[in-house]
Image 1 (tube, helix red, strand yellow):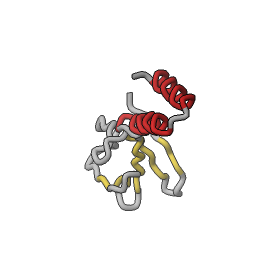
Image 2 (image 1 turned 60 degrees about the vertical axis):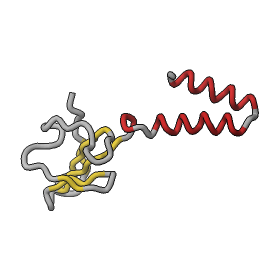
Image 3 (image 1 turned 30 degrees about the vertical axis):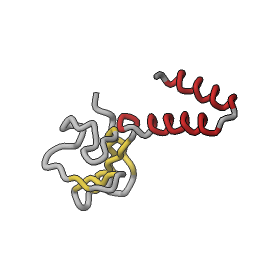
Length: 100
């Protein structure tokens, strides 16, 4: 079912004024937007301690390179799309370009 079909189903359910129908469609939407392919997990490099902290509350150490230079695009903990960021020595944010 496409996103457009899902929205049409929601509008039909809303027009019917049936709470169960609306709730059912909202659950489908929730399930779609929380699916792993839509999740983002940001990995922040901690220069001082030489590891990455993740938004899914884990830590990861690489012996060489960065996640993207090692072709890592999915978080190995939560399955979300991996977004890499680095803090400079001064604590400023430096976003890394996505690996293509």
